[in-house]
Length: 336
Ligand SMILES: [Zn+2]
Ligand SMILES: [Zn+2]
Image (cartoon, rainbow, N blue to C red; front, side, top):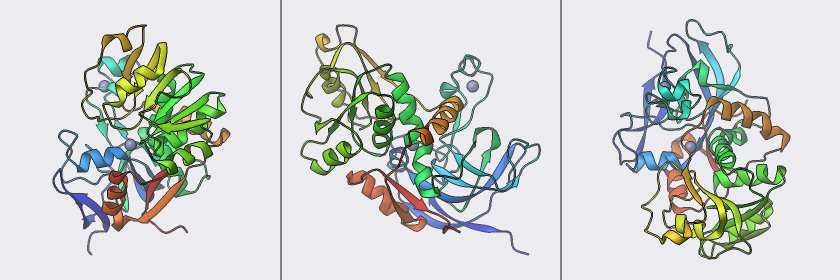
């Protein structure tokens, strides 16, 4: 009898391109579940991994951390989930529970954390194993492709929105997968949204207005009025001083990405006035539970373009060029 195999898109070296491979189907160890992947979102972080901008990925690696699928088998001791459950697997795949950060409720900063699709194999494959404690049970709606972007663009976007505080006037820099979700949540919370896109990107401006931005313009413009907070989703360091100039005294600039080009030097006067620059790193399980409960109440409607698993390289190239409205999702299994 031959062992069961699966199709996967594999990164052999970083930087590099993905190659389709036939791999042994993984087996769930104690506390893990085997998940049959239905869809996996393509996140900008995947691009940073493939392009060699993040240190020491697991190699060879199956990327992907916006995974939606069904529990196919349980490892020993798993009681939280059952076979057939619909689940989502996010970026945070494991934390130690013992370090200073874990004990203080900041598991997103865990010193020994492992990350799906970076230091653990992810969802660009027909199956993956996940620690059952970090997989989120999902409701029946929305469908697989539309649920996938909630698992990172949604979760990290939600954490970024929390870090931006009670901002009445919220600026979003870079209107991609995360911003298109955050704009909907912010509007639901009664916040006013101002979208800053690449100068001249009229389609991006129109997309942002459709999703509730009351103003959309180039990121080189100051915006129509001072902001209370800004969230930077574009990985462009030069946007930090631009956003500092756009926020009022006491305002916050949140850098939401895992990687950013160098931040140019800037005059102290634009930070003066108790303005704050901060980053957002990873997520906690609490972020995930809160956001997944909130999303259907908004309701968040994701805009998705899907491609088959084999076209992961093309999907990443589209993201690199920046010509994506909303999210790209890989279809791994055909809908039943
Ligand atoms: Zn820890
Ligand atoms: Zn991501």
